[in-house]
Every structure is written in structure tokens, then in C-alpha cells.
Image 1 (spheres, rainbow, N blue to C red):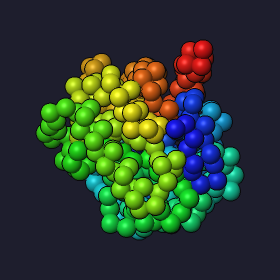
Image 2 (image 1 turned 90 degrees about the vertical axis):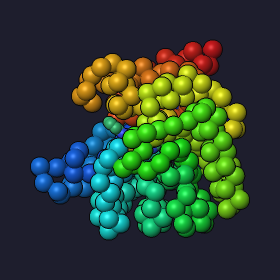
Image 3 (image 1 turned 90 degrees about the horizontal axis):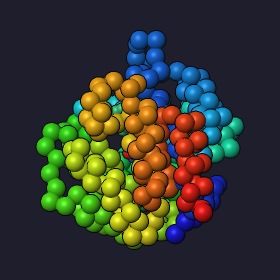
Image 4 (image 1 turned 60 degrees about the vertical axis):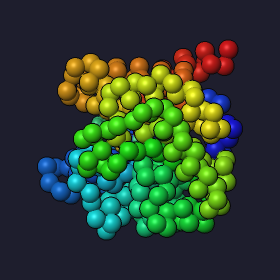
Length: 277
Ligand code: 8Y4
């Protein structure tokens, strides 16, 4: 239940780990143009490791609600140089944030240890590519598609529906040959969910642990926190993000995907001390 087999690593998830976000997109790394700097992304990644990141999640396509998709070639051009450089120097597992099977394949060849897929390996060919490797995978729930998912999210019982989706995707992964101990599960905060749905999931996260695999959650800087606080800027969400990570881990999460690694690592030391007592 608590070992996560991912590529070169076996992670002990009896205690919470911090996954640091490395965006290789022009909105976060640019001189105001379209170009993306490999060096800046690698430098940021190394900074996150120094701050205590246990895992790095590298993404080349913004998955924010309404964001425009990038082409396969553009995504590969963004993430591969970063993965190639980091895999030579990093002492923590690298994760690729993608739903595209071709990007998964190239990233695995370049040395990533985890595939973080917001589409839970539903793209044709994705299950096979992960099955033919030894990488770990994060299966995430999303209702709808990134461009439209926040228009009208609807659930009868959000916790039950997320749980049943994750159960189905975990069964599909195992049937394809991906061993259970290579899987972590994620309710997908903000992905086709209203504030009330996100709060219901955070409150009742513990029930998702009944699926028998560790939970990964991402709430860092998300709009649900802005909604709760009444603050629009993502830069006003750091304390709320930290609170959300602490609540998530107290309620059973074992990996938190965050922008602010140092603050989160400190907070999770306190949580770990309480959990292990
Ligand atoms: C401000 C900051 C506004 C961030 C929106 C966002 C998750 C994920 C994302 C997650 C897993 C995001 C790739 C969305 N969220 N992967 N990815 N779980 N496993 N939005 O919750 O950070 S991107």
C-alpha cells in the first residue's frame, strides 16, 4: 500500500512527499515572447530540489482552464531538453506531466520515472507505453476537457463518482500490465469541479484511500482557493495553498504537487511528526 515503484526509485509513502512543479511554458519562462528557456527551467528545478522537493513534475503544456493546447512537436521541444539535462544531475524522481502517448514515450526514453497524466491513460496507446516500461503513473480524475471543463460541472455525488472513475482506470491499468504498486491516484482538484465539489473532495479525501493506493493531490494556487478567499491573484494564494496541502495530508494524501516547495516541506514535517506519533 505505501511503496510506490517508479522507474529507478521505490518511494516510501508512509510519509508525505512534496512534488515541485516545473512549468516549461512561455507564460512562466519568457522574455515576453514565445520562446522557452531550457536553462531557466533546469535552474528552477535545481532550486526546487535544494528547497526540499522529493519529486519534480515537468510540464510543457498549460492545463489551466481555457488554455490553448500546444502541438506535439512544440511540447517535445519544450520538455525533452529539460528532462535530458535534469536526468543526468537529479537525485529525485522526475515526472512528466502529459496526456500524449508520444510525449510519454520520449520522456521515458529520456529518463523520467513517473508519468503524471490528467487523462488517466485514456488516450489511445497510453496504457501500452506505460505498461512496456517500469515507470510509475498518476491516474487523475477530470470531468470533461480542459477548454470546457469549468463551464458547467455536474455531479450527484462527487466523491463517489471520482472514486468509481479512479477504480475503473486503475483496473484498466492493471489489465494492461501496469502493476498496482506503480500506481498513485488523484481526485483532480479544479478539473471540472466547482468550489463545493473541491471542498467535498478535500473533506472526504480519506474515503478515496479505500481504493488501496496512495493519493496525490494538487491544490497549489488553484482558483478554488481564490474563490474561498475572495482573492484573484495567484500570488495571494500561498498561505491558502499551504493550508490546503496540510489538510490534504491530514486527510490521507501522500504526495502534494506544489509551486512553493520550501514552505510546503516545512509544513509537512509538522504533519509527519503528528502522523507518526
Ligand atoms: C493557478 C495555478 C491556476 C495552477 C491554475 C493552476 C494537477 C496536475 C495540474 C493536479 C496532477 C494547475 C498537471 C493545473 N494540476 N497533475 N496538473 N494533479 N496529478 N492549475 O491537481 O496547476 S495543472
